[in-house]
Structure formats: C-alpha cells, structure tokens
Image (cartoon, rainbow, N blue to C red; front, side):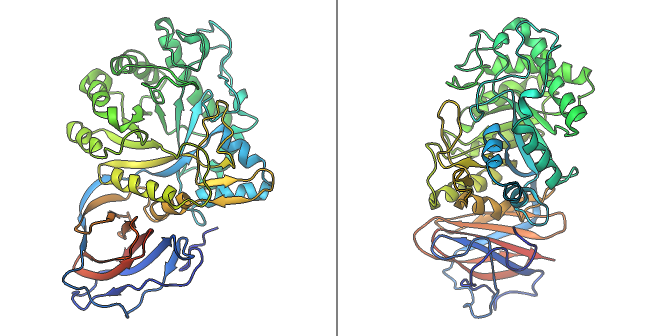
Length: 475
C-alpha cells in the first residue's frame, strides 16, 4: 500500500536537493520522490537537504513554465482483461484486493482512474467467445454479458468500487465482431465485417453500454471503434481500412449511438500504432460527417516511437484528443529487468510532450509465463503473480508508471518544459490544486547533475544512473 505520507515506499534518502543561492524568493515548497536501479529506492520520498552545491554554470538546465499550459490530462490506468482477472483470482481474496488497491485506491494506490476492457474476447482471454453466439441474430435477441461473469466482471466491479464511481473511467474496445458477422467466418485471423451486418454491429456497442449500466451499474466512459484495425493477427482481429472505419463511424456507429441517446459517448478511432497514425487521422477527421461523432483517437506503442506523429495530428486536428491505450513488453516475463520501466517512462514522456492526454497500460497482472493467452502471445506486465506460490512481483514498470500516475491528477495540464541535458528526458504538469510536477528520467549509466528552474526558483539536483525522479512543487 502507499499511504499519503512523506515516505511512499522504503529506503534511506541518498539524493540531495537544495534551493540554490541563485534563487529569488521561492514560490513553492518542494518534495522529491525517487526510484533507482542501484539502491533500494522504490517510490521513495527523499529528504530535502541544504548540503548540495549551488548550481554550476556548466550544469544543464531543465525549465518548466506552469503558465504555458497544453493538453488537459484525463488520467492513467491499465487493461482489465479476462487473463488478468483469472490470474488475480488465483490469489487469496485479501491479497487480490491488495493488488487492486495498489492500483486504484485513491488514497493508498498509484492513482489509476482509467481502465480498458474488451468487448467479446481478445488474445488475453482464456478462449474465444462473443456476447452473442447465435448465427444470424441480426437484432441481437441473444446478446448477453454471461461470458464475462465468471472472471472478468468481478474484476471490473471491484476496480470500480475501489476507485470510486466519480473517478473510474472505463474504455471498451472490440477485437472482433462475432464470427457470424465476419467475412472469414471466425473471430481470429483477420477478416472483415460483412456489409449486411454493419448496422447490427453498431447496435452491438449500444447493447454492451446499456447492459453494463443496467445490469452491472458500471458506466462506460469511452468506446474505441476497433482494436488495431490494420493488423491481421492469429488472435481476435478485424480489418478496417481508413476509409472503411470512416464510413462505419459516419453511416452506422455514430448515428446508432446518437439514436440510442448515447451521442455524448466518447467515441475513439484508430487504436493502433504511431507509424500509421497520420493517414488514419486524415481519413477519420478529414470528413466532417465522421469527425462529428469522434472524440479523438487512440495510439499504441508497438513498431514505432515516432512521438512527433501525435503533434502532427494535433496540429492538423487540434480539437481532437489523443489517448494512449496499449503498450507492453512482448516475449514473456523477465522478472527484475530494469529496462522494462525505462521503456515505459520514455514512452510516457514522449507521448505527453506530444499532446497525449491519458495513458492506459496493457494487462494489469499476468502469471509467471506472461499469460494466460489462448494463442501463446505471452507478454510482461507491471504485476506478475506466481499462481503456484501466491507470490506477487511488482516490476520496475509498476514504479515507473507510478512516478506519473500517483502525482499527476485528472484535470492536470501538461506545461511547456525544456531541457539542455543530454541523456535526460523530462516532462512537467500543473495540477488542479496548483502544484507543479516535474518528472525526470535518466536511462544512462552515470549520475547526472542538473538545475531545475521554474517561477524564479532554481534547484540544484542530481539524478542517479538508471533512475526516475518526480519533483512536486506546492504553492
């Protein structure tokens, strides 16, 4: 658990931070939280000290300007999949709830408020299933949430209860329509939506949203049109070209949601990798008839780290939001690997510096193999559970994500920040309460001194090798 106190985890204070002799009257009191590979700091609150040297003229400068605000943040979260639900269900009840509280509890957790789940099955399900298995059921008389009840729904209910109704925001994404709606007659291996079922598939989203609200009392905050619409996968997948997704939104899904009284639903397009983002955005948002139904677009991190693609899309369509909805290390679990966390932080900083307004990780928990996954597409996760022993491992990625999610509140704004420091990545935010949050990543092999300046205050700082720091300045 993470109590709201000066010490967030464990470890002695090794890093020294001071207000420099060059500073004018400080406008904020500062606190520092650190996670580092080469000591025992894991979300450790490091005591401030006056023993550090004043900034030298040759030290690189990191500047944050809380008055130059950019995108407003909607939050952070992870995917609540059937596989994660099954893994956590293998733990004793209280230990399972402890994991969920460490993610979603507003006082003791790392600040998660967002979640993503799958409509019908995905690769991180125990098998292939849909919520309507009746071939030709055009009017969806046999639609049911029953396949979600054993594993997935208890996880959704508990995360919702722990986070709180006013904080929990659920995004739902389909990997595939039911097999009987598709050109290949199966949910996996690509295929496309059959034209005669476009209206039925649009009503499927409505059925899901209404059933979640009516039967489970869990509101759906957002829908994505299709997970990874350009990927033919051996697991559940469905192909939409940019023009096909545009037309489906414009002529079917958008009007159907509106007719059902769900016109204010956050409908999100794309939901795929950065390398093909711009072409898809141009198709979806370039047509006003489809753009009117879309809140924004979603991106994943696979294939590309072209973070600037998001800035180019934002420049072309500044009214549309960009949400990160999936990323993970593929190839199974590597316990204790520090590069896991560094990749997360690098991507989060790159995304936030390029107009991304929220960040949803992939599975919140997996087993020691990186599953279960019904096609063997094993991956890593921030929490790994040994289902034989009940041991829970918190990976470096868990702590690195927390350096953002615990301190950047929903409603915060990303603000302008610059750095002249080679080897350091930084981003800054101002929270609704006026506090300033600066996150600094050092993925190099050496400690890095730097000066942090903002609002007339200069701080002489040093970050250890392979470490992440969060500086919080309070008015």
